Amino acid sequence: MAVVVTYNRLPLLQRLLGALEAEPLLRDSILVVDNASTDGTGEWLRSLGPSETSAASTAVRHVTLDHNSGGAGGFHRGLREAIEEHGADLVWLMDDDGIPAPGCLDRLLAEPDLDFWGPLVVDEADPQRLVFPIRLPGGTRVVHDVAAASAAATGGRLDGIVIPFNGVLVTRDLVERIGYPRAEFFIWGDDHEYRLRAEAAGARIATVVDAVVHHPSVGDLGTPMMFGRTTYNHTPSDLKHYCMARNNTLNLRAYRGWVHVLLFWLKTVWFYLLTKPQPGRIVMSARAAAAGLRGDFSGHERYLS
Image (spheres, rainbow, N blue to C red):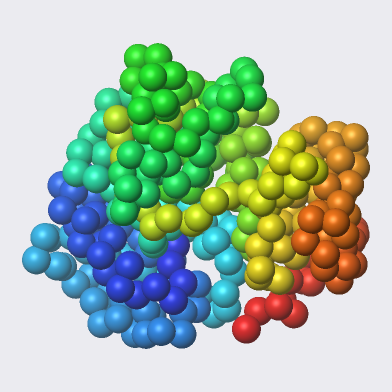
């Protein structure tokens, strides 16, 4: 079953569903989770009917949530429904803004010995460029293009790395072992946490380099700081920054330890004092981290428009 999470991107959702409906293996097996969109997405989905069949003979199941739960909440709900309500043994997870290339699913399914695996995510305007750079396992090397990723692959895949949730497959067995994405994270870091949880459980993880999902560019990830020695995930969005500061703190504490938490806070203070002076962001970061550490995941709601 394919699970798509969408929010206020109806044209992109319609484009994606057109591609998924062309997949014979997905007949009657597409679930859309609408995160309380305000652009007519819910109305359009309801117009399809609960079991109305498209020209491609694919019934699109859908659920519209009563509030925006972010990507984390959407994937939590969608994966849970696919496993528990529809009995799926294998789930294909994706955001609404990607579009799998022809043959992507077939190529992924040709790797039967994995628990959590996915494609390369490439820039739809420049298909030789990776949208999300890949840090190769076992070192510090980061690759930014398809050629470098393919050259580093063994047997057509990069074992030990996957980029959730952009066209990734996850098995029912793994979900039953590690649970669902952390809905309370809302956005930013929920996908990374799920991969870390899978790694901790000994999951077999990989990126298949000749399976491809096209995705709009997200620009350069990371603003240089500390005289170019490292980067920081700066965003002009207060919502994204609040969630990043909170969720990254929790992920580092759980999977890397307090030393890495302190290093992240040091980078945050340095960045917003010296690199891009915004002292208010330091206060916001501290408030977000403290809230997360005490189990309060409501603070991001003040930044929802």
